[in-house]
Image (cartoon, rainbow over all chains, first blue to last red; front, top):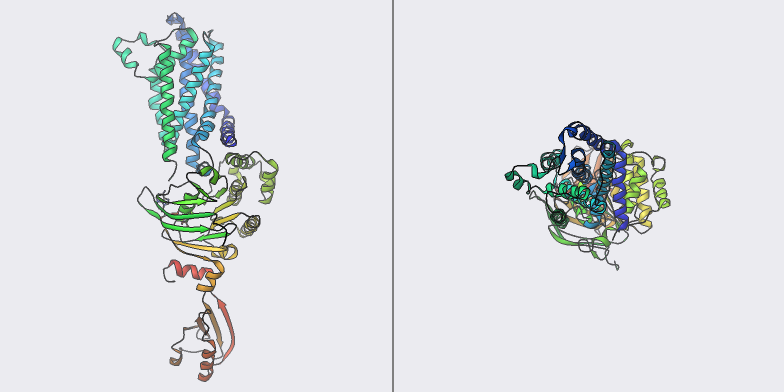
Length: 253
Length: 310
Ligand SMILES: Nc1ncnc2c1ncn2[C@@H]1O[C@H](COP(=O)(O)OP(=O)(O)OP(=O)(O)O)[C@@H](O)[C@H]1O
Ligand SMILES: [Mg+2]
């Protein structure tokens, strides 16, 4: 194992984060705060309760997930897309590093950043709405698992993308809609029966549901299924990454 | 040579996804500790060949062994011994020089060694720029940063893909010195260049590649001996209008409005024909003031080779 390489990549990526602190931390925190002001405080006060939880508190897990997914993807995809774009990837390709080491470095840094961001949003939410966390261990586990899985997904996206447009289109056109439709702001049980069935094809439903369960002990789908689906998604991404490195897909000429 | 080659390229071919074949069955052995210059016109396949050895380009066929290890199966062992300075300047614009060079060392699996990096940066006259962001550096400085990155993990084999592109004369001299110092410390260096004088000045051996085919590999000195034509130039006392018919059997040319008679000969032959030529000239009453002989440069050899008329 080339630990020096993992550390070098990780530090490089974290340095990039801190160099662009405004963009990478401040802006998601700001936008989440806006959600709390609008949905939590303004609209939430008229909404009453969902599943027995005050609406302002109900949306917290969903909002964290929304940021976690978009930020994990954009971070990790940008992290690997940039060297491809600038050409500095030559160094990575000529270095004695395995795919596992590259992933630990890049995806590890993106995950760290996302988890930090998630915790920061939770802290910010405290300023607006009181909430409690029923299963802190599971909360952290979901946070970590989701951040890692979607950073992996972002990493794949960054390798696949050959333009900045493609880099942004997936989070914008696929992930954001799926998150909004995935029960971030409502319970799936509030949907008409047919849409409840359709919603189950949305992987984000399982993430949000499981995460919300860790806070309030209520869920749209059984928590075991949430864990299994998240793990499955991670596994698919891992296999994809393994294949990418094995074949040199879009990395080697 | 008795030692096994440090790099052995065996029947290597590369066809890009576009269908273009950039390397055709290339066979090449690089000897331990030598400076090997790869020459060839634009698009000949030099960068592709280096790319395959360094892991940037997937070979379509063939095998490369570096320091006893297969570059694909044992990539880890191979790559930690290799440093690469690519042709294009690819740098992390926002990073500092210090950070980027330390990053490279780590990436290649070596523990941090600030004093070694300091020495390297000083050697490349980059020490006073160590905290500068790379984007604020000039092109020549950026190239030096790339060299520092490639040397940061103390490689045994160094690839320099056109190290002197966009580099001023002074830096080029510095770089040549650095390359020699590296060679003296046992590093094997493979460089590509369009400056023939660079190859002539530095290389122990020269390989010439044309349209993906390695058409010649030779010790530089032997190459210049073998293919280098010698010329004898005679400054005539009275200009000639044409070469006399009696001298038709000689490879003669007139230059400088008939003032100079040039005789091209092969100095590998026992009989260069010079003595006989001079006797005949005397018999014709053609007198000369001065005579000098010169050898064709590597550049002349190169041009005649890549134009396909050796
Ligand atoms: N990614 C690619 N896809 C298709 N063809 C390519 C690719 N990269 C290089 N080539 C082609 O392969 C040939 C060899 O290119 P290469 O870069 O190896 O040449 P070179 O000898 O380094 O040239 P130069 O002196 O200009 O650097 C060229 O004809 C080039 O167009
Ligand atoms: Mg080239």
